[in-house]
Image 1 (cartoon, helix red, strand yellow):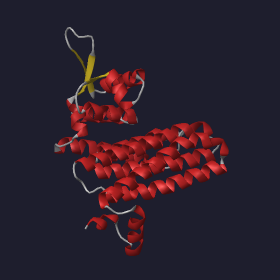
Image 2 (tube, rainbow, N blue to C red; image 1 turned 90 degrees about the vertical axis):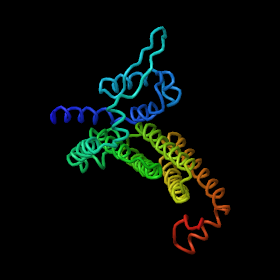
Image 3 (tube, rainbow, N blue to C red; image 1 turned 30 degrees about the vertical axis):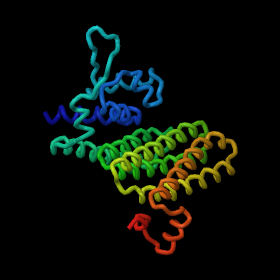
Image 4 (cartoon, helix red, strand yellow; image 1 turned 180 degrees about the horizontal axis):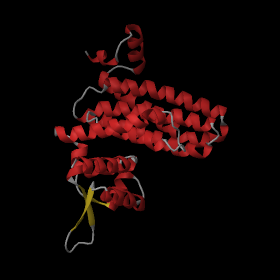
Length: 273
């Protein structure tokens, strides 16, 4: 039995190295959907979504639901997928933890500095995805997405420095996705009446640095300026959103918030106390 679970875990590990598959699983948490519905919600081409669904199906994470008399084919989560997304039982939590630990113990130090195009890069992304799977708190997930976005930014500098400018667009798109996911987690936390002021301050500070780094890179390497531009737009829009939310929540201008924080050298959450 243990040997079978180990095989399943290895298969899961390989399957969950792709962000789009994680997004599909989380979207299917709400209800069964067709490939076309998933395509619209995720902003991916239906052929791409179908390919990922086939892989998830072969890993026993989704199943097809064909309703008699209807031409549409729906996909829904299997029980193993539900347990992975919500490992409430000790047994499944332990299995996921052991698998994750076994994976990172063998590959972490080799893959942590891997850049796009490297054979170890897929391992690096797998570690990031498992980190997200093991966290259920929205604010913690938002923080992790911001960290991953900063990693993508560092990778952008590395691939440019290595002369691999053809990889810049893909890394930039990943940066944008991480920041968008962070904003979604923050919005969910806001809807559940969580204190989002500290994470908004993190976004405002982080994106200011992100924008400065990207502008500097575009000046030093004009040949990649156009490829970097979408990430710069995402960074500045994220900062504007964070500042607007901070001002709305605290009833104070952002400049006053920054002045108060500088004088007190403390967290923005105290503004609300």
